[in-house]
Image (tube, rainbow, N blue to C red; front, side, top):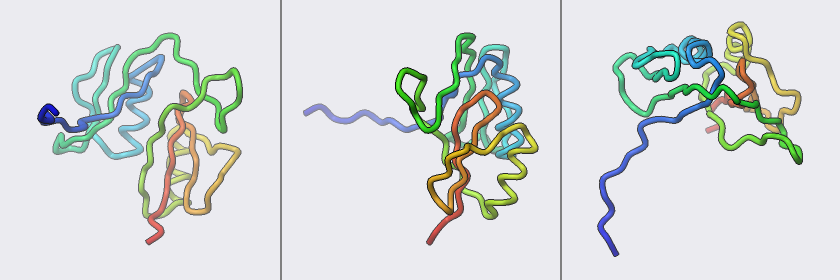
Length: 128
């Protein structure tokens, strides 16, 4: 067996038809700072530039997934889980930035949300 090289997750990347616009949404939602931005790529992270962060990359042919998934339509491959202290207030704030609530809400302490271009993300409160 070969020794495992040093590896760490430094970010998560979302596709979007307009990276700057979607990055502005997540920058406001998370209170983060935008780094390394142009028309094809924006990297977001905490003010101290710690990792992991979130990047948005240009995908002109982006198609939003369906939620819940249906046959023969784009399906969610991954989603963001965002811990909040007040689910109702966080949902209202996300909606004020352009998100919407998904019609199907499978859990009480989780609010499934859809960002302005259709990515699914969860707002949730800690249940412990």
